[in-house]
Image (cartoon, rainbow, N blue to C red; front, side):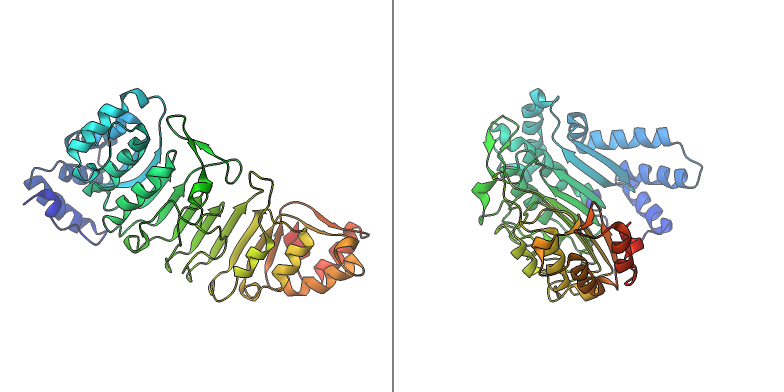
Length: 384
């Protein structure tokens, strides 16, 4: 029997894990010794340096030492399996990367379709080598910061969907940018234009069924997925328009969401997010949403128009916490007195904690007058 065919305990009870360690030791798997050392360390009777040395040898025997030396992957171990892993393409080791990728293609058959002479595919090969490895089965936290995302986003999704991840609770997936939709520079210096993937989407493979334990998700970039269909998610942060059709709030099926944070600024053309996107923020899509953070969301509207739209939103009555960037009401924004307009809207927010990150400015009213209006609805202290 291969040691990866030995049934993994479904409990955290150490008795079961020590029995599992004995089976691994009997099969010649050094991870068994590592598990026993972990238990001793947790009991205060072990040597952390010895444990680190054993896991170093485990990585060597399993062919993962090259990933460690490359430096793009940072990962930790727990009970013989990779526990937390973070990928960010390392620049310093690029000259040796083709040799590593060629070795990985030999040692990890699932990556045979990757062309080792195409440097833009190396990132995907490195990601696949770890995520397709049996020791990634019990991953608890994963970060994938992509560079050659026009290839590696889909490659990562295929690798994630290739096996169940019953413990993966937290994940970051995406790529960084300064302005939304701005072209990126890949690892070879070639230009990647995110707009090429509008409607098409960077990821075609459905990953959500393979991540049953996922609760916290952060997505960054443009046009990553066609949808996010995961009713087990409770916390979601999106930076950019991560859905392939450009939607911000029409994400898919995420009925379990409790907390949603949206960051979106003006795009490379100087256009902010359309306020019409808020039409998709409704109680039907988000029946359990309690916390909404729009403090980093830039809409093509005044803060009064945003505040007024939120006041009319079907999701507002169920919210317990709401964050916005600023609250300004000018005479040009409304018919009549800005302070009276605030007094009319404020009661709709009285049931929640309202946080304004930046400026509160009601034209024609001083701070004390604004405080008096807000304090009538229990809002003043929450704003400051």
